[in-house]
Image (tube, rainbow, N blue to C red; front, side):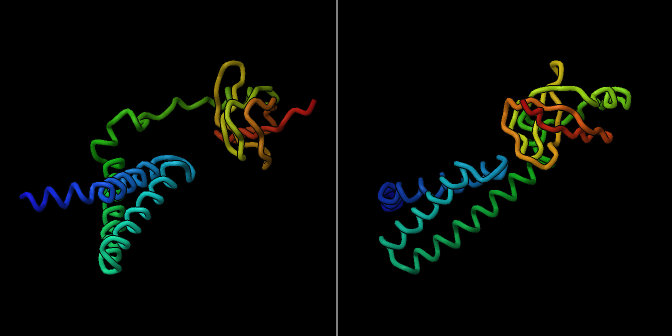
Length: 166
């Protein structure tokens, strides 16, 4: 018992690097883009492998690499399964109800309306028209947040906008 405790205390930085790194990789799966959690997770897992390699040798480093990859894969697959149909799917993290559909007349009334982007359009994002936030598509161009736009085309739920110059 004392030997196990001593091993854990001695290798605490290594264990924390690996567990935290894998947890950050799981978080990255649920975040759009490749951001801070993913990069930090990769750095921590790599650091844990390097620490093992330098302390215990190549065989231990290779074993920790394989274990880390297996643990990351298993954790990610379990969290995705939970997000699809498990406890996580019933949490507030996921929107489970469909937004109300806009009627044909409402979408056609948007044609020619002017508004402001509330997110970056690259080329998809959100714009606000008369206090209503809608998912929109720019005409293939990147538009910054706060850009004035005009609706140029409406096809069902697809609302295309163009930047208003000047």
